[in-house]
Image (cartoon, rainbow, N blue to C red; front, side, top):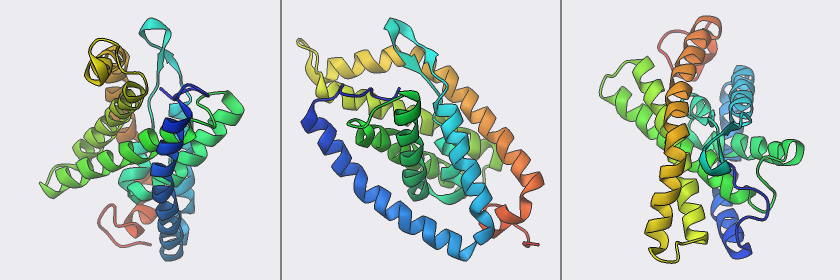
Length: 223
């Protein structure tokens, strides 16, 4: 769920924007370094951004009139690292706010923090952890994309609960309420996103193998 325009109190919106900016700046430097070392990776980077744009634009009805959607940021996170997705995700969210009225400008920082920062970092950490334990590439990609997706929604729930605590049970009660609401639709969507990301990685391994080797994502010699 992208937090819609004007939904967060101004102080909260400003705080999340301030928290997101350093990650976006660092991501810009990461992109410059990656493209300098691997100019051929431009197409993969564009593919990762397009994947996130398409998946996160698919708004599916949830309960109580809300909506859920995949995030698509796990793909770029496992290929390029989480910093890159802070920039790619910010661009995706900006265009969605301007062109699709999905999200908002005042809430852009909060949405970037949840979908383009927390989600990719969790995805990357899960991916590296499973690969470090000699887990298969497919398993690592699946759990990275799935848990990165769920981490985004937990973070969004935290953001909303902080802004609108429950009158009786406070932040904790509000957090449980929001996470429970989205669990009905988001858990199946996260599983689907994990499977879809594995399919995309398999296709890239066939048709963009040299680029993946150049990124040291898979072993081999770049052609």
